Image 1 (cartoon, one colour):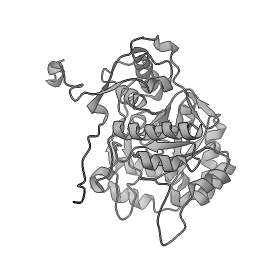
Image 2 (cartoon, rainbow, N blue to C red; image 1 turned 45 degrees about the vertical axis):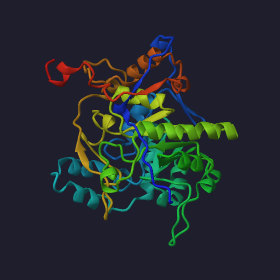
Image 3 (cartoon, rainbow, N blue to C red; image 1 turned 90 degrees about the horizontal axis):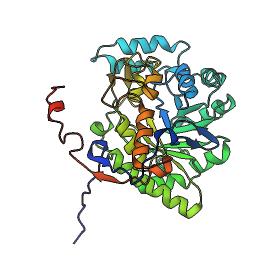
Image 4 (cartoon, rainbow, N blue to C red; image 1 turned 135 degrees about the vertical axis):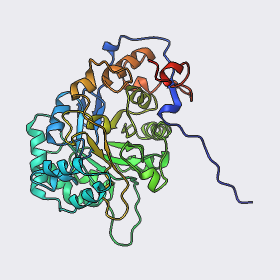
Length: 378
C-alpha cells in the first residue's frame, strides 16, 4: 500500500511562549550584537528591502543606531531620479487602483547610474551598506553595487533554492557567486531544513527564513505556500547547527517577516535566529519613505501580484521604536528594550545563549486571564 501523506503541526508567534530561565541577568549586561561576515552590528535587527521601508536616508539613520537597512536595488530608488514623486502617488492611490499604479511604476527600467548613486549615498553616511537584488538580476547588478562600495549583498525572492530548473537559461549558481565577489552574500527565502542545508553548502554567509508571513505579503493566499515562522526558524536552525558540526562554519540565520512586537522578536531568537528582518514596524516610523504605507515586494508582478499596499500610519520615530521610552503597552515600541529584558528573564547573556531558551506550545498565551483586556475594559 502506498504511504499516505501526513500532516504535522507547525507554529507561529502567537502559538508559543518562552520559559523563564533558572538564572536571571541584568538586561543592561546582555549582548545583542550580530555578525555578518566581517561586519559586527550592535543590533540584530534588519529593515526589509522594500520601497516603503528603506531609502538611503533611512539606511543611514538605522545604521547609525546600530541596525542594518537593506536597500531594494530593483525598486523605485534605482528606477527614478526623484522616487519621492512615485512614493507619493502610491501612498495617495485608492485601494481599487493602487496595485495597477504600482505595476506601472515598476515598468520603468532600473538605471545603473542610480544603483551606484544610492549605494554611495549610504556609504557617505558612514554606515554598513546592504542591498538586495533578485536572482535574475544578480549577475548584472552585483558588480555595479560592489564597485560603488556595497558591503553586504542580499539575493532574495519569494522562495529561493540552491537548485533551479529551467529550459530557458542557466540560472544563478550561488557557489560561483560567492567565489566571484568579495562581500558576504545573504540568500533567501527558505523555510525547510533541506533547503537551508543546500543553500549553506554553496558558501553563503547568511540566509533569510520566511515565506509569506509579512503584513503586506499575499503569497500564502495566492500560492498557498508558507510555514509559520516559529517552526520554520526551528527547522532551519537545526540545519544551521548540523552544518556547523559538519564543517565548522557558522552561517547567520535571519528570521524575515511577520514580526510585529518585541515578543515576536524574542520568540524568533529563542527559536534559533541570529537576527530578524522587519518591514511594517519600520514603515510606521517618521523616517520611513513610504509615508505610512507599505507594500509587498511581489506586488509589482505583472501577471500574479503577491502583495498589497497596506496603511500602517506614521506612529513613532525610529529612536523610540527601537529604544523607547514609550507609553505603548502592546509591545510595538522599544523593541530593543523588550529583547534585552526578555534575555535577562531567560538568563541569556547573548543571542546564542538565547537559542537555548525553552519554547512551549501555548495557544492561550495571549488570552489566559485577559478577559478585561479582550472586552476593551481597560
